[in-house]
Image (cartoon, rainbow, N blue to C red; front, side, top):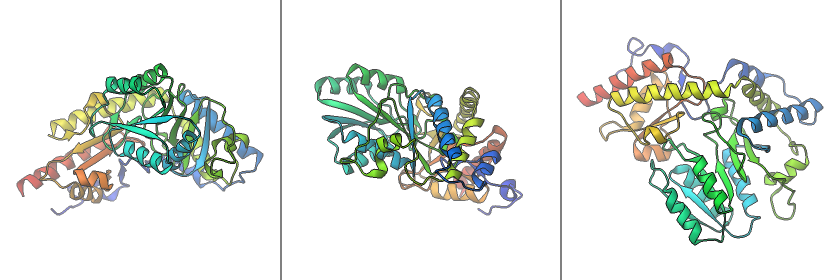
Length: 362
């Protein structure tokens, strides 16, 4: 199929970013990022780090947060490092790619743990989790992914918090794709991870670790860079820190109106899911258990996800499809984590209809 600007008018415009990251960045956030950097030892910078941390904690209800320079993987590695200090075994829940990555990270940290898995796209059997914990009273911590980005599943935060509390567990949450897209309550967690990009709509590069208990440095037990207590002891700035990333995040947080954001995103996702179903697309996760920020489509064998994604990219729409786990399953994702609106997505539906119909006629 030959793509032309007549059929696909967005070719002459800036692409519509429907990726899980990097997301579309607001001009004010870009301006903050492009400002001249300042020293991480400047009084102003240290004060603004504290202000940023306060906004982050207020958003999710946590008492403390540390900012590390790196990706969400680093945040989860820092959590694994803290878990290595606890006695007893742990339990990891996995129903997708990112749950499996927690398993990998715990294995690399040599943590003692068991795994309860659910099918990709399915919810956990919470009764099974409770029964396992009742039968294994030596379990000390539970770790899971709140928004399983690979499938769109939004796991039950309140249910797992209740289960953890009932069994006296240290609850750890990968909240990376949830923060900034849905209401998140981290007031009862032991540790939780986030990032500066994705739902917080800033640039990637800052790893966030939330917690609610005092953490002391562990110079004889943990690598310096992943020692959260060392960060806390040094006002959150123990090492060189890129001010550009900090001020971009700070600006994005100041712009965020959580209630408006969550309500608008839920409304947009509901409309888009309905339109996609009307076009005959199948979603991996049922709408009632999915994140409004990630819509994962399971394509039929007749439509190759790489081909479809490539065609849409040429036409000016950036979707998520190039990750190995998506290609292996012939899935493609529409993500609403950055700034987006119904009027910019409506032409995408026309494109999807045209491309799939063209493929069906071929």
